[in-house]
Image (tube, rainbow, N blue to C red):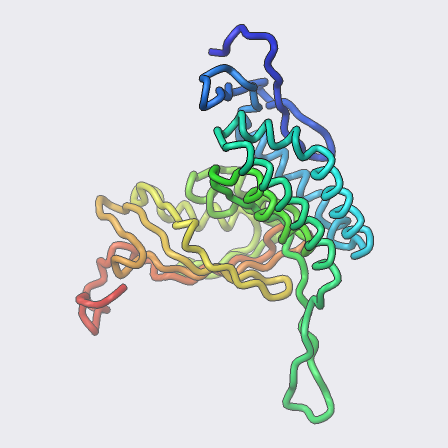
Length: 309
């Protein structure tokens, strides 16, 4: 249900180099916190819209990753100038949307502009290191390379500056924005397969190795009738990049066969995933964890269960 008020701006979202409405044309209303007055209508993005954004990011990845530091710096500096020029305009929008006082909203614009200027220099930083080897007179060179599609999550309390800060670092490193694997897995979304290369290699304990996208579905199918839900703890994930690889360690919680687990509290629930990327998609996923999530295998608890997990 939307208001009939006509002097209200409608905001789209930006993907694939153009402004877009939602696939189903849905919007949600934003009211000024101080007055309650209708301020704007904003795209209510659906899964189809998220998929379009991810696909656009993946398509842009190869070219952006190869863009020269000079061109990246030019674009970041141009963005900083735009923020400076529209400083008052953006600050007013932010204040009316979030209820922020105008001084804090203006401060955010100054910090965004300064951060964009700073990141223009980051693109020239070293992208690797020279390592010693066991062969006399020889060295190894470790190169840091962009991973591909990356997602960023930001809170509302510093909406403008925190959104920029979350996006700038991965973009400066040559990534595009929207990493979705864990969220899609938790939601049981079939479009998780779009994150994988066709010939992806998948490993899961007691499942073994599988090859191709369907092997991931085959692995998931093994939990049918037992797994009621699983939720990864997004704010406790540790990301460790290395070349084409990304190691992610963390915890999960869930319920299986009527019993619950919570990583860090119960024996089950800690995991370590090793991703390998090719052309912005996952080409290899090895998952390392104890599939006995709810600690049914009593015999293997040789040290007892009265321990810190």
